[in-house]
Length: 161
View 1 (tube, helix red, strand yellow):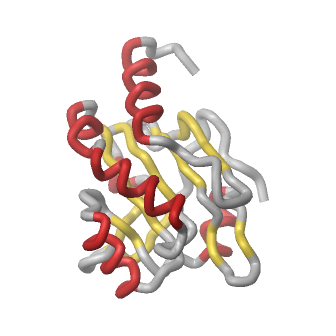
View 2 (cartoon, one colour; view 1 turned 135 degrees about the vertical axis):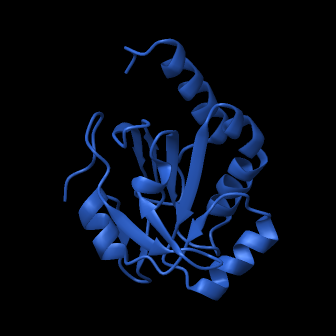
């Protein structure tokens, strides 16, 4: 399994969305900068903190034209409870197949129990990867304030990497 690098097209992925419908990547983020957050599960305190921080930063991200989505292997009910509890303001996918997602993106997978490790991507409006953050454990992930600063920087300096 290889990791996604700068400039690569984000692979086509679909996961069911909390509340119905499907999250289709990278299509649902097309035309805007996008953030894809893969989180370990609703039981993970670090994931809860990350998702809550992105929800608090939602207005600032929206002002920059940034769309955020998150996904995990959690089932529909568990994911809906997390969205409600953390007041998440962006689409959240559930029931993701960890092996399929890992094969497509290079995300690390925990074997037992089986889940995706924290993985985050910033996508350009054309669906290509501008930044990838892979964690092999509980810590090491995208931070909302860093994403805001990074997108401000790359929009002001289009040739920046």
